[in-house]
Image (cartoon, rainbow, N blue to C red):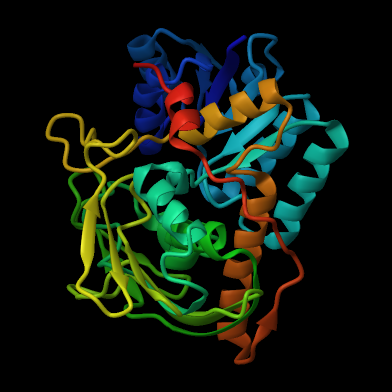
Length: 377
C-alpha cells in the first residue's frame, strides 16, 4: 500500500519533492496547500493534485503523511497540528527553530504512535552510503579528528525572498548545518559537547536575485559566521565552520582523519559527488558516485550538474511503516542535530562550552539493495 502524502508549503523546495515523487513507488502525492492559495493551485494544476486549505489538508482522509515544506518558523505549528490530527509527518530541516519545540514534536509523535521524519535525507544518497560503508569497514580506523566547512556568500544572490534566512531561527547554522551535522552524526554517532564563537559580516544585505525585491536591502538578525568545535561520544573532535560571508575558499566540505587513514566527503547538500580515501598517508583514491543509484546528476532539470533525490527519506519512512521499523531520517536524529545547532549558537553567545543532553544510535546503513527497492526503475 502506498503512503498518501499531502504537501504543506508550495515554495521553491516543493518543486524538487514534487518532481522526485514519481521515482519512489512507495509514496503517492494526493494534495497540496499553501497560505497563498494561488501557489497551491499552480502546483496542483502542474502535478495533478488537489489544492486544499492548510487545515483541510491536515484533516483530509486522503492524506496519511503531511510533508511539511514551510519556512522554519512554521515547522512546529504545522507538524504539531498534523500529529494531533493523527498524521505521520516528514518535515524539511530543521525539525523546529528551538530544541524545546523539537523535543515536544518527538514526544508527541511517540505518544500518538506516529512516524516523525525530518530532512536532510542526503546521507542516504550514493556518496553518503559509500562513506558509511568505508567507515563501517574500518577503512580509516578510529576517527580522531576532522573538519566540516560550509562557506558561501549566502542566499540573496539567487533567492528572490531571502530575508527569512538571516533572522533568528535561520542563519547558516540552522539552515545549512543540518546537512553537515547529520552526515557527521550518521558516520560518527552522537556528539556530547560543543564550543563556539560567532560574528556577523554585514548588518544589512542587498538582494541581487531577480524578482520584485531585487535592489532592496534588509537587516540581518542572526550571526552569519560561526565556528565550533564538536566533541563526539566516540572521542573524535571535529572543527565546524559555517559562514555566509565568504566569496571564495579552498576548504573541502567534510574530511575525517583516523588511525588508519583519511576520508574526504563531497557537499552533503547533495546526494552524490566524489568520495576520496587516503590509506595511511597514500595518494587520494577518488571514487565518483555519478553513475550510482541516487548519485546520477538530475538537478537542475534543464542542465543537470548534481544529484538531488529529495523524497528518498520519505520513501524510507514509508518502507519503515510497512516493515515496522524506525525510519532512518528520523525525528530523534533530527532532534539531536537540532540540539547541537542550538548549543553552537548558545555557546557562541555565552562564551562557554555547552554539554548536550540527547544521544542517538546511528541509523542502520542503507544497503544498495534496499536503496534499489525504494526507487522505481
